[in-house]
Amino acid sequence: MESIWEINYSKKSANVRPSPVREILSVIKQPGMISFAGGMPAPEVFPVDEFFEGVSVLKNDGRNLLQYGTTEGYPPLKGFLSEWTAPRMGRRVSQEEMLLTTGSQQVLDLLGWAMIDPGDTVVTEDPSYLAALTAFHNHGANFIGIPTDAEGMIVDMIPEAVNKARAEGKKVKFIYTIVNFHNPCGSTMSLKRRERLVEIAHELKLPIFEDDPYGYVRFDGEHLPSIFSLDPDGGVLYAGSFSKILAPGTRVGWCTGPKEIIRKMTVFKQAIDLCSSPITQALAYEYCSRGYLDTHLPKIIANYRQKRDAMENSFRRHLPLEEIRWVKPEGGFFYWIEMPRIDVRALFEKAIEKKVAFVMGMPFFPNGGGEHNARLNYTYSSPEIIDEGVRRLGEAMRELLAR
Image (cartoon, rainbow, N blue to C red):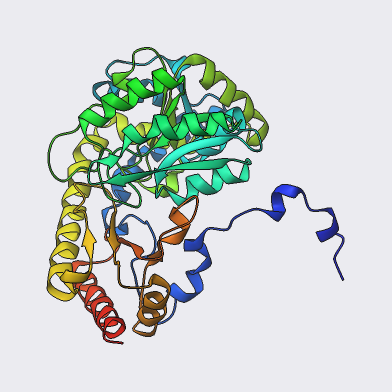
């Protein structure tokens, strides 16, 4: 018998998608389990003492910070970000071109409110960030998945796919891309493709959503220009986050874009949470204004580079190299492995028996796929645990291949 809740659920709730990472938490918490499943920063790099120094702001300005704040965000922090991100943005953006959010995940939801009607279509990488797919899906979106390679999204495939969808009467609303150290693929979009993507977006009259939570966590090579900086005509919304460069518990993100879309998203945010916490925004500003963001970021990068290298070396030491492929990420949090002869469901079951966990590839594909892919996180575990986890995974792979 249906409960009074079930008979009154919205249509949206009937189709809502849970996070596959959150759903396997009970498995991950088993004693002795090594988890490569989450996307968590390493707690040992959290700048606890430096962050605590800013707590005095509560004593000095507590009457304001404990009150409701502006929906647009804490002005001093927006001012800092305008200056700090200017090299990446190509210029200092104005306060009206920036919105502070409760994590950059909220940017996904706000853009969904502003842009997506049920049945609309969004262009994404194939595969793509699963929480973005979930957020857009929950707003009623369908997806055009564009394949990726070592240089990121194969952007020249976009025009034909979009024109085909439009010929079928579909409304295509925007292009979503993670250009730096892609989640899950680990790849970085080349400069040539970034420039071409801007051209294509103009030709198709489509805005671009450039999601860049990992861009400042680069281990190798030079930073590439943001898509935002390559499009002076205002066709790009850029999202950044303190989760990967400070700590996710701050829940402070931001987005930068034309005043019109920032204003529209701000109005929706007013109805969702009124404002993000003025206290955490002020604490983040105090941390940044003392120069700690710039001095601590190299420590984060060094820690994660060591772990990336540890996982790379462990792959070469323990995995059946003739059976798998991967891209070595130049930064970010993840490896993405392709296993043409291995069913990832069977591998997951075998790996759990051996007490090592990862995320299967299927949830990252908007329209099906991923049965031979897996995402592995390297930032959370120590190099020694990474090596043992990969050894167990390689053992599971060889047992399946021997069948």
